[in-house]
Length: 81
Image 1 (cartoon, helix red, strand yellow):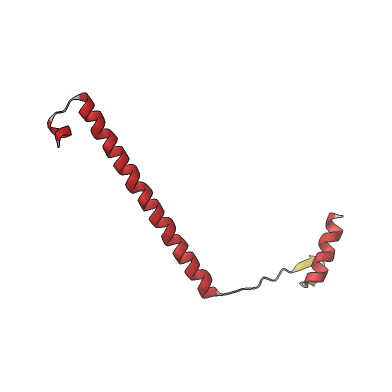
Image 2 (cartoon, rainbow, N blue to C red):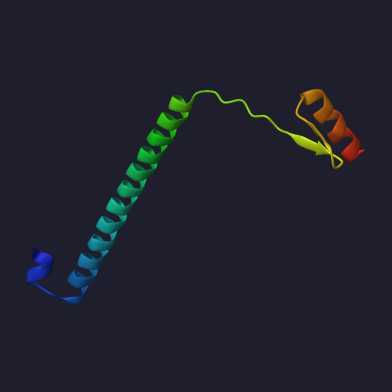
């Protein structure tokens, strides 16, 4: 209240500083809350979906398709050797 009643330059500067700090504080609190909420919903979605195995299907040349891990490893070994 004193800052508003006596509008000297130092009081105005102090008021601006307090307003900036307050804004920064609430902005950081909001950011933290949003991150926590997003993490919560991400966790719920992963829990609801459960474990989902992934299948990787590769094309060997133009015709053959394969999905087993042994053939995949051989293909990558040949590719990078």
